[in-house]
Length: 434
Image 1 (cartoon, helix red, strand yellow):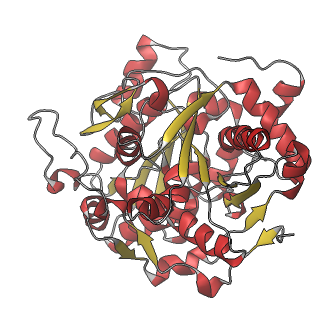
Image 2 (cartoon, rainbow, N blue to C red):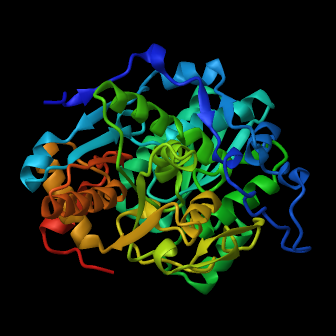
């Protein structure tokens, strides 16, 4: 029997991130200036991003070195463990081998720290004193507050109102690491005041919170903006997940036939899957990659592949992506990190090129899967990650029907310790489908 837990020594921590932009047969569609409809000049981004991240955003270099200062912080929790889900396999009576990469071991409890540490570091190197950001469920906001704490940068978080109210301990965690957090829409920005006047009872959205954070950064000379998903440099930083997972599976002479990740903006799906897409493009393996999203916010399964703004106030460049429209406000489901109207340009391009597929699930069936997983494996998953669990269980049952002994890998991108109120609602039959 394969070991239940597969670990790497910290000396085996990857030294480079993988950049898939180098391997696309044709270039990714560029961001456009909304006024001119022409590709943006990198200098246009300098108002809100440090130069090092702008360079990574545009880079076609296949591997990018991870600075040693970043690797030093990564070593607090990386390499993260890879688990074989023996008990879940037994529950499902499947011939499939199920593995999951567990990113909940990071200090904030999610994969988001892989990019927050990098972004805070590059801002620090360029003398930035303050960073603003948005957060959906609070994982990104808490990850960035930790990173800013380590690099002595002030941090301001605009947290989507529905999650601010559903997940109060995420707010506490953000404060614990020295950042300030306010529910969005807020009276602190011009756009926030506009939305509150028009929709005083709105649950908020990531599109609104992004607008507030960008407005704040643009109006303050000592401030830059940081985004936790969607952009190319964020996808880049997250590839450390898949690079580690490949090394861990190699220890037990396995290679993933199916790779699964939940998908909102797309960063954790990219993190676990892009090294496998690299191998697929090289003709080495034909791994199936599945993006899993909520039916409440189905950008990949029901959105249009077109240029759209990343925020509601139309302050960002236009990005070519699968989108439901930048003014879309999703229902207030508990998987707040998946409530984004669009998907990353890289993920969208992969779907358009049929290199990945996408499925969507309703909220109650996702929590049913989460409970089954917890009772089998013991770990409480975040609602976001539970979408990947539901899909993994479905794929394992397909293997049971066909008799195929496939190897399935999914990314358990965060724990659900701050989501107990959602589980309470599920057990009290107070949770419905959107």
